[in-house]
Amino acid sequence: MRRPAPRAALLVVTLTALAAATVACGRADQPETTVLTVHAAASLREPFEQLAREFEAEHDGVEVRLNVAGSADLVAQVTEGAPADVVATADTATMDTLAADDLVNEVTPFATNTLVIVVPPGNPAGVAGLDDLAGDLDLVVCAPQVPCGAATAQVETAAGLTFTPVSEEQSVTDVLGKVRAGEADAGLVYVTDVEAAGGDVEGVAFPEARDAVNTYPVAVATGSDHPSLARAFADLVTSLAGEQVLTSAGFDRP
Figure 1 (spheres, rainbow, N blue to C red):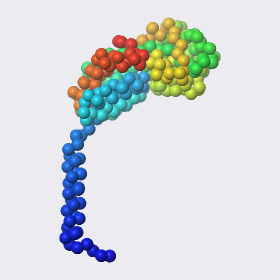
Figure 2 (cartoon, rainbow, N blue to C red):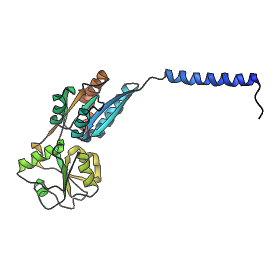
Figure 3 (cartoon, rainbow, N blue to C red):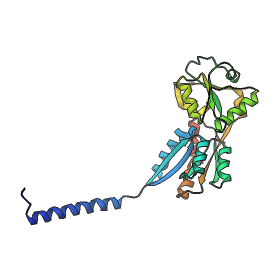
Figure 4 (tube, one colour):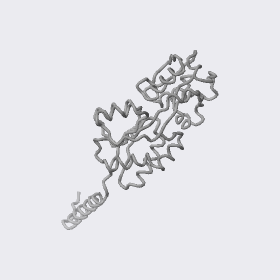
């Protein structure tokens, strides 16, 4: 194979070095991305995705990373040391667990949510109210340690009923998913979940729901690497702009 002349070889080496230097310089000029980790209850997915986009648009170089799950799971993750900057749960009891361990501070209520019966389109089981859930049908609810499960237990007690669910789920979205998939005749979820599901399901309101209104708090994690940004995100959630996003999703004011 014919070797390049020494001068040509030197030129190739020089150009390669210049190209590498240019790339490295370009990378150095690019600002580093700051990741803000926000843990949010499953029922907050859609409004928090919108708030995350708005926050990123207002803060160059910031990426909001949402971790959405049942509140009990979020508490377990943060307690076990998962990175966290902001935490928003579906009730005060789960947030109180984190506060008691000094894992969050500046806790602020920002929304409320109410239970509703969810049924498949057309309501084939003919569910008309809470009493029907104690009858002979396949009912799915949240597990007792989950906020929607605790609220379910409250309305069950208030109505003097006894439910025999075929399954107890770890998040309200799992309950919704089973009803949506036709795996259950009915479930108990939040008003916001039925609204988000559109025509995939139907909601049946019941008066006993007023006995179990969940208040949602947001807080800054004490172990946050970006406390100022975390506070700014929490402030967005509780601001007028945040309220508008949340009420559009079916949430009420605290």
